Every structure is written in C-alpha cells, then in structure tokens.
Length: 183
Image (tube, rainbow, N blue to C red; front, side):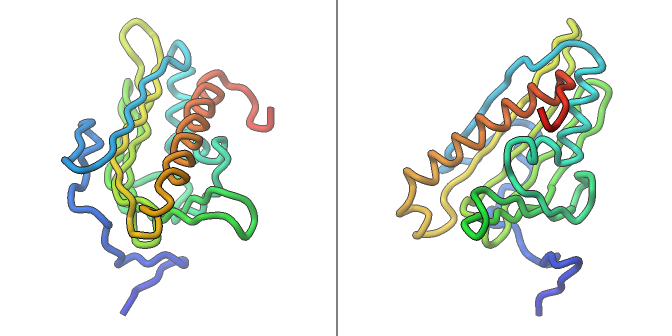
C-alpha cells in the first residue's frame, strides 16, 4: 500500500540505483551527463541570494517550472514535483532531495527521480563562492529516459532538457544579481 503525505507518495523508490553521486559530480556509466559551471555574480551577497534561491525553489520557478514541494526549503528526503509545459500539457517531474549542503562557500542540493518522471537519474544545483569573490552556479546531472515512451520521443525530450537547463542558468544569474523576481 502506498503511504501518502500531503499528496506525495513518501514510500516511492528512486528510479535509479546510484544515489547521491551528484554531490561529488560523478555519474554512473550508461547515463547522459550535463555539466555546467558559470560565473553569475561576485561577492558574499550574490552568493547568499543565489544559495537562498536554490534552496527555496525560486531557481526552479524563475526557470518557468511549476513547483509543488513538501517543504518551503530543500531538505534531505523532501519530495518535490516540478512541471514543465502549459496548463493541462504540463509534464510532472517528481523527485526527492537526496542531499543538501549549506556551507559558507558552497550551498545547494541534489535530487533524484521518482516514478512518473520522464527521466531516471539525479540533478544538482549548487552556488559556489570562490576565494577571489566570484560566484558560480553549478548544475550537474546524469539521466536516461525512464521508459520506452520517452525513449521514442528522445529528441523532443532532449530538446526540452536543454531548454530547461538554459532557463536554470538565466535564473541563477537573475538570483545572484538581485533582479526582482517579476522583472
């Protein structure tokens, strides 16, 4: 029997075996890898804005995704369903946070896919403050299509993934710069 809390299937198993690898930017064999590290700002304030935006799901919202999370802030074990698309044509992407880091120079989280997600794998979102004051946004993911249907639509699924990644990068720049959310 499925145990549901706040509409989330809290007993759902992750759809891949290699849990937590994104924390060390590693990927298992047989997965596609996405790795991005871009300068998005400078200084402690920019780092703090980006870190808070990542941990509070604002990065996802600014990237144009709908977000329904079990908690207002990412925490290990927290379930989240983000959605890409419009209205009834929004594709749900259920995940569970598998690790969180909240340091003075590095902050973010990684989450893994749950049943119903079009991909199987893990993705991480991290703010980094380097000693020279540069603030970086790091996105690392490994994934593969979750079933035959998404494999069949592989080109479309991959294009959607690239679009969302570009939106994450733009959202990270916006967060770090302090640009108002509605601008």
